[in-house]
Image (cartoon, rainbow, N blue to C red; front, side, top):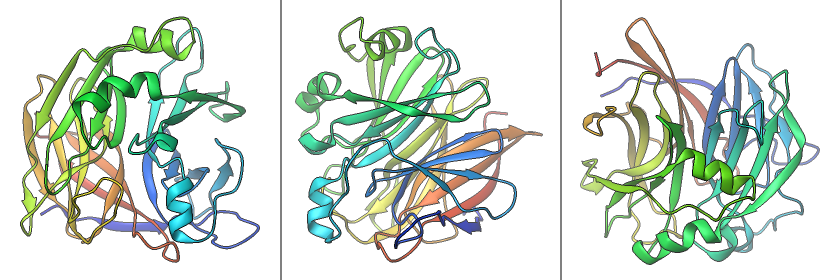
Length: 304
């Protein structure tokens, strides 16, 4: 069991209710700054780690989502992953890429937000149609549900989340230079180089399935996973708990540690110091009236 502590609620500056993120789904840490997307919003929130500041909102997609839950669920872009992209000629300071899950046609969209020289996010957003990238994946995965993304060791990686009836969790990797060329609009969408399945175990008989991932320095990656009792990538179900895991640079699953707090962890970020992994996680309570949480935990580095 991995002990976690609640750092704060994800409160944001807003002109109208709600004044918080309620379905945090992707997390990136850059220095002392946190970037968070929520799967039921058009927004990206930026938080400073020092102090209890309100998150500043940026809008990757235009328009307003309906307030009624069913209509909102049907219309949302379902931003389930947020990835920190390293610098390349098209984005010399690097960028954030907010990615839709692909579980419905309207969820096959992404937003590219470039960094400025001071690490701020530019107000200009480039929207990207993910359907050319997702088409080969839809042919392989009956219920496509991309929940995490990261760049590691020259590869752009996506995490396909399984469901209770088919708990097949897959790491899908692409050549990063080929992905750069596609993002720049000078090459077609790349084909996957490899697809690697993972069995993550269960909590209370419900299979754990990927909800996010992040690269580790010096190789390997971490992930969070949730045990959600649902047989449909579109429909939510009761969550039996969450866990984090570590994968070595050679692809071996080194371990999975259930969290001490019963929650649905949907985003993860990691820093490494003094032989330990310092983890931050964000949660999705599946209730628009309840704020998402920022959690922290420390895990001895199993790669040592």
